[in-house]
Image (cartoon, rainbow, N blue to C red):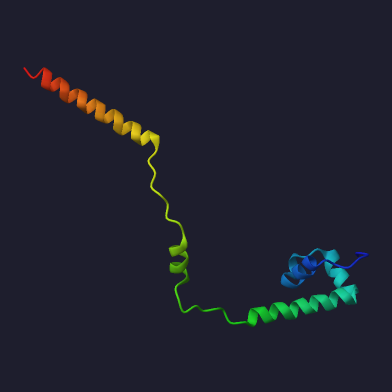
Amino acid sequence: MKAKHLSDNELQQYVADQAECKNSVIEHINSCESCRIKAETYQILFSGIQQQPKPAFDFNLTDLVMAQLEQPKRSYSTNTLAVYLFWSIGTTAVLLLCFLFHD
């Protein structure tokens, strides 16, 4: 058993999922009235949050967010430019050779 009281994180974990709590936490809550009252308060708070209706928007949130995102700029890598440059030079060389030696 702990000599001092449980932290808020330990209390919230106890209320949210008691099966995943350490035995020392469960024993402390069973023996400490102050921590038991805090745990009951968290239980009331959690159940109140779960009972609230889910928010419903009368607009399409996805479209609003997507409109504000910066569109990616198209960039050409140097590798792509180098390929086009060598292709152009090669094609020009082949055409020039064909013109010069067409006989």
